[in-house]
Length: 310
Image 1 (cartoon, helix red, strand yellow):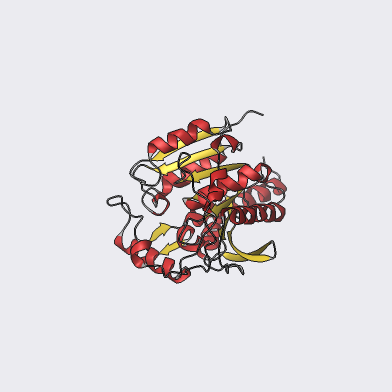
Image 2: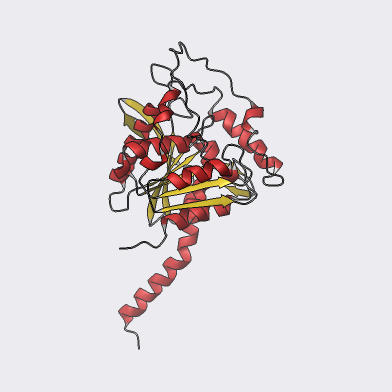
């Protein structure tokens, strides 16, 4: 027979179990929190969504053209396409960075972004997040497209700052090297276009027209002007063999920027024996925003939660 104290404790647990899904839903419906991380004197916008009792931390890096919120927190009435909300629902604290010149992060005085500068900024963000949630494991870094190259470079240079990395839509070709270019002068600051915003959605029936329309609108609102990069020869430092943190290589089956032959070469040379390679069947370069989103989320969380030797 239960004592009165035991009955009260059991009732408290039952009530908490009933309220927890509602609490998670309410948190997800709020807009993400904007934080500021200072890297080498420059303010970086970092967007955050946090689970009630997080089991881990994930940091998201966007691609070449569009910033964090269109890519990772897309809001479409009647559809669930927010990567951040989906990861919060799985029990994670999630942070998404706007790189220099993207979204809410201003350009620096040079007007340009370089691979090494982007990697150093990511290192600053990883340190900030680890200090903010010191009782949790080190963050898992997830990079999409160009962001996967930044993630690779950051953890190749600073391997102790993360517990693992996900390279999603990794476009790097280890054979093709970029020459050292002359000084690029003033950045061109070209206008972004709706056509470019919709260009990654190529898989048939993978996303609704309404969702594409919402993405295009959000992308152009956040990034009306294309960010400018230079010193692309710095990508030549990338070496799969020098990436020694646990790694998940992830891409869509139909992704033209991540052909299987290139991915196989990268995977076979990765420096960590703790590695996985997953292909999202039917997905393309934007598989994280399409019907493949649940598989994308499962791949990442299963990688983080994988059994490991003590």
